[in-house]
Amino acid sequence: MPTICWFRRDLRLSDHPALVAAVAQARAADDEVVALYVVDPALWRSAGAPRLAYLAASLRALDEATGGRLVVRHGRAEEVVPRVARETGATSVHVSAATEPYGRRRDDAVEAALGADVRLVRTGCPYAVAPGRLSTGQGGPYRVFTPFRNAWLDHGWHEPAPRPRDVPWATLRGDGVPDAPATDVRLPRAGERAARERWRAFVRDDLAGYDVDRDRPDLDVTSWMSVHLKYGEIHPRTVLADLAEAGRGARGALATSVATYRSEIAWREFHADVLWHSPSAARRSLREVVPADAWATGPEADDAFAAWAQGRTGYPLVDAGMRQLRALGWVHNRVRMVVASFLVKDLHVEWQRGADHFMAWLVDGDVPQNQLNWQWVAGTGRDAAPYFRVFNPVTQGLKFDPSGDYVRRWVPELRDVPGAAVHEPWRLPDGPPHGYPARMVDHKHEREVALRDHARRPG
Ligand SMILES: Cc1cc2nc3c(=O)[nH]c(=O)nc-3n(C[C@H](O)[C@H](O)[C@H](O)COP(=O)(O)OP(=O)(O)OC[C@H]3O[C@@H](n4cnc5c(N)ncnc54)[C@H](O)[C@@H]3O)c2cc1C
Image (tube, rainbow, N blue to C red):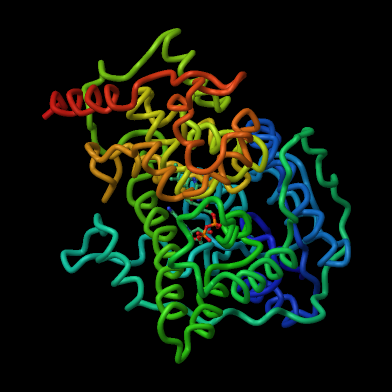
């Protein structure tokens, strides 16, 4: 009897414990492995074009890696997976466990629909330490990042799983990878091989300088692993194992950078853990920081939101970030923080609206990371930045884009403004260059409004 390996957020063949389990079971029965991917049309319709285009490319890469045996079926998972099990006579479906609210509900529904004769076997998940695994001395979830990271480091993780050789893939009719909507976003190369190549290049060229340079959007030296981790083209365990190898015996900058990078991965795992314990955090603030009437609503808020989304706020670093988002479907982390803070604290628009916009455009758009990072910036999350800490878009620009190269790269209207002056075009003798908007709000004033609102917070 064949087994089914149902791929979801694990579009790779290396370091894939669920695939290892599926192959072992199939070999024991001298049978084959069905490589299945299910496209739910409702979800496919609701996701942003850049993510869909990337996902389609990643599925094609996985199909190639399986020798053309990836079986893509369209329909609701609770119907498709049992149907494939009946068609093939499989008695088990192997998956990497889903940990987010939607995936957990879907898998429970699939498990129920499979009935008693077909098992849904969960082996591993998209994290080094499964969300929900760690608990404090009192037995509850961690609320603060640093103790979580310490417990996470103490807990440790398995070595990467070996890549199965000569997998006996089954041949089965599929519906094919659906056409993704057209997008102008310049997508990175998709697939496991691209992920590995990018990761190796980062370790070779930029890891040693990561601790010092990672906050500089003008340098383009971060790893870009978020996209590959989101689709599981590489597992964080592989990344952590390579980091350990790179850091073995290292001192100075390399040792610090390895620790800093590991800590960023720990943030990813912390957010997944928070969402595991508080699924409502995907939509609702974990705490209220201003009274409900403080948020901008109506046509004025719509206009402010539109200017922000188009990168026409008159604040160069914000505008550069929002235009990078539209061009690449990716934004540097420092700039994500600045643009998110600007929307919430300068324009007083609720974080959920910004998070939705990010999800529509980001190629790495990922519910736990996106929603919890928005909550971090908005001050509404667990162990979030305090609400009163408001990012100043000008000083952030001067500090992290000191020569203005990042802004000039993304805002053509400012291309002729030399050096750091580009961060304050309103100070130029003739004002902002033709075509570039005046500041839509006064940051200093809006910061005070945000703080006054915060002082009236409920409770
Ligand atoms: C408002 C906002 C929204 C965000 N939305 C997403 C999202 O949808 N998907 C996503 O993967 N990341 C998100 N992030 C986190 C972070 O910005 C990206 O992971 C990072 O910019 C990706 O680029 P990189 O891989 O080159 O990062 P690197 O600097 O090379 O970092 C290495 C890895 O560490 C992890 N990491 C780094 N920073 C964070 C962080 N703040 N939180 C969690 N993990 C982190 C990522 O997996 C990243 O790939 C968001 C941050 C903010 C402030």
